[in-house]
Image (cartoon, rainbow, N blue to C red; front, side, top):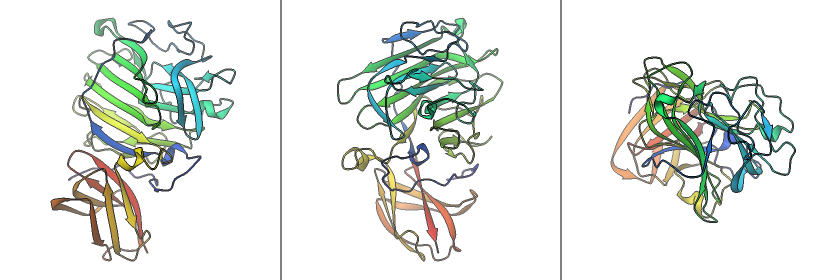
Length: 351
């Protein structure tokens, strides 16, 4: 399992937090059939470019960045707050809002194209919470018959908000055809980015992909390199870390980026979320590892700088195993467990 790593941001403690930062959300990947929505509410036009969508009575959008918000359709817990409305920026991201506030949503931002790193000055700060599936300068295109829409599907308590970009492209460039969704799940409060066909022209771009909290210092984003696919990403080391998208590096149809809050229904849903339990941690070398929600066939150990120090493939899929890491110098490390399709990471300490 060969990978080029950007860096690791220190996260991944399996501690349940009632007021968790987005940096504590557990990231995992998956694959699924990309299901396009055709119902719900259509926003903007085929050539939408930088219009903000913050009011259901103005589906055409406009320059106003504040409003009453579009209905999520259920109460969604994110970063320790309950949100019931949202706003859409066509540049690949959404902002969370509360109908009890005035304004309920606020997408004000020094840069619409860097939603995670930009130093937004929004009051109250909870309106800076965002999710970016492809934060970049994007636009609709009549040649792609582009559309932007949202729909809440299902029935309580398992409803799903789907926000969908169809046929979008980098601004002023041809050859692109981006199809992707942001999904919010009722009850589990999981955030997913699901990618459909992502055709990229000759010009590569670097997009911000991940979550943002009440400021740009609270983030949970992903990063790849010029030789690392979207299926093999690492956590960004800064809020400006990006995902490269080119004619050779792009998300395959059905790729899922999943962000799971640690405080979610720990006795039910979370038991099925792929994760790694390490005991003891820190340890002096002898370490017990259980892999939940994933039958691992291989593992890799990285330094905190992202250098590979050891890798091994298993003859049989494992769920629980004792390891002897006494050969490792005292330091902080990350272990990656993989079944060949999905990968999960956890930090551990040798002392």
